[in-house]
Image (cartoon, rainbow, N blue to C red):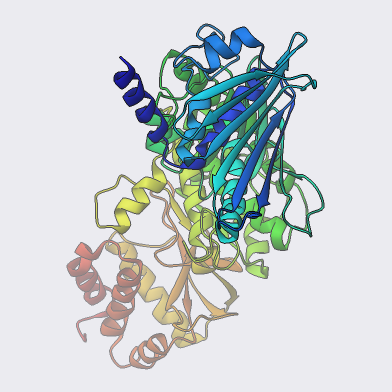
Length: 586
C-alpha cells in the first residue's frame, strides 16, 4: 500500500505542465481559507558554510483561517483528503493543491499556521516525510516556504518565471496577490499581480449574475478565458475549443467569464465541460445578444449622427459598422429603424431605409468622396452612404479589403441580413473568404456602387443642323425597331472621365445623367439619352451623314445599343429601318 501511495503521489506531482503551477494551487487554497490577500516573495540565501550550497527561498503567505492540528493530521498530510467536495465556492476539491509544491523538487517545505489558539509548524523533507511541532509564537493564516537548491542565475530565472506564472494564473484573482524580489536592492516593495477583470476590444462590456461575471468585447483577434475565484481554468484563442457548436457566434467576440460554477478537469489543463459549463455558455450567449450588441448599436448610433467625423473616430465608426453586419440577422432586424448609417449629405439613415432603397433602385450608392456630384445625387432624392477610409478593411485592419470594398461589403451584408429569414450569425464574410479561395459562395444580388462610376455632370445643349438631323434620324430608326428612347438629345460632359462615353442616359435630359448601362430602367420605361457631341465617333458620323445618311444613322443607333448592351437581337430591324427611313445608300 505504501508503494502504491508513493506512486500515486508521484503521479500527482508530475502531472502539472509547469513545476511553477503550484502557485495557482496555493493561491487557490488561500482563497478557500478565506484569505483576501496573498503575498509571494523570494529571497536568495548564499552559502555561508563554504560548501557551495546556495539556497533559494520561495514564500507564500496568506491571512486566512489557517489550520489546527486536526486539519493538519486529517487533510494536509493525508493524500486526497478534502472537505470541499460539496462546496461550490472552493475549487480545490481534489485535495491535491498542496502536493503540487513538490513538482519543483524542493530540499524542504516549511509550513507555519495557526487556528483556534493553536500554532503549528510542519516541516516536509526532500523524501516527503514530515515532522510536526507546536509553536509558541502566534501565526496569522498560513505561511509556506519552499527551500530550493540553486545559484544566483537560477534565482534570477525563478524570479522572472514566478512573476510570469502568477500573472498567468492569478491576475484576476478574487484575493489580492503581490510579488516581491527581496534580493533586489532596487525593490520598492510588493508588486501587485492583480489586473482589472475585462477584455480588450470595441464596446467592452461587463455583465454580472449571482456567482458569475462576464466580460466581452469585439476583437480582431479574440481570446477566450474561463476563471473560478478569478484563477485561470483555461485560456485559448481557439473558438472551436472554447465554444464548440456556438463558435460561429463568437468568432469576432473576445470573452472572459469568472464563475464559481466552473471547474477545471483533474489534470488542471482545461475547463470541465459539464452542466454548469453549459449554463455559463447560455449566460455568455445572452450577454453577447443583449448587453454587448446593445452597446454596439448605441456607439454606432452616436457616431452616425456626428456631423463632422474624422480620423480615428471615423475609422472606429466603420469598424463598428462592419461588426454590426457580422451579428445574427435576427438581432439586426430588431434595430432596423435605428439611424446608424452615415450619409455624405443630410441625416443618417436606418437599415430599413437602406433596404427600401435597395428594393426600389436595385442598388445603393456608397463612396468615401464627397463632391458636387454626390450633392446633386442627394438633391435628386437618392441617398449616398458614406464609404470608409483608404486601406481600411471590414474588420478595421489595414490592407485586408481595399476602399471602398470595406463599406460596400458592410452595406451588402446589412442588406442581406434584412432580406434573410435566417436567425443565426451572418455568413456573408465567410462567403467572401470562400469566393476569394475559388469556392462557391452564395452572395447578395444587391448592387453596391460608387456614384462617381455611374453619373456624369452634363450640359444639355442645342445641336447644330447636321447633329440635329442625325439624332432625329437615329431616334426614328430606334423607335421603328422597337428600341427607342424617351428622348434623344445632345450634351457636353462637364467633367469627362479618361474614356469619355458616347452618350449618357437618365429618366429625362438633366444636368446629372448616368453612364450606360449603369441606369436601370423602371417598369420597362425607356430612358432618355443625351449624345456626347464632343465624342470623336459622333463627330465622324456627323461628317458621314450628308453623304451616306442611312449608314451613319445605322452606325449611331447600333453604337448606342452596343454601349447600353441591350436589344442587340434587333440589329436586322435597325438596318431595315435605316434603309426604309433614309434610302438604300448605306
